[in-house]
Length: 321
Picture (tube, rainbow, N blue to C red):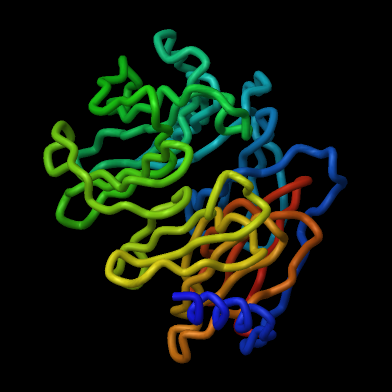
């Protein structure tokens, strides 16, 4: 395993083998609000949300415009679409829903989840929403009792039905598999347990991973896990698939989110790099993009991606150039 880690560290110094054009759409100063998430609304529209309730609309060419969003200063952590609705979850028990037809926002505050953040949200195959998270301060890097939870909500945002909870664990990420099984990443401060349910009620341990798994994704017909070796987010990243050994990536920082581009797995990191896993050679390459960290990534097409992050950073990278 030590030899494998050394090999990975060496490969990180290789320059990217693919040509690409990097277009910095927006980049401001350190103190500016950060974008934490970006969601594809349709072929030519993306929403990016983040710190202090910042919410912008971006088209596939990089043009940015504002939205009539009732910003109340709550950090936006995740955005998802379902039918004619767009759902925006925050770090303090509030979910906004935007109706694409009538172009109006509604707000729902879940009082029994006060001081809890909705860190991730997914749309289930049955049409319901599933949310997860825990104590709000943890999403900001504070040391607090996690009070983690997983809950189900209908599209009308009626009360949340809690289907899993633990005072000692925070829930970072959710994934529904094609067969309807759901995976969740729970972290106790040292290690991650991936838990699984087949009925949205009974949960069992599916995997144990050293470190914090920040993101679970189904990419190239495989389940991938990415994150950080510990809670020092700017140190070492981790990544693994369900059936392969965990890789430690020295000095990349946390691998926040993953996606695919030209068939390769690509991840944004805490230390201002993009990490690409070459599907042909299995080499790990890095792309320098910005002095700021990027937090999320979305596909514009099979060869073009949109990444967002710290200090209002927005970047479009085209791998066909």
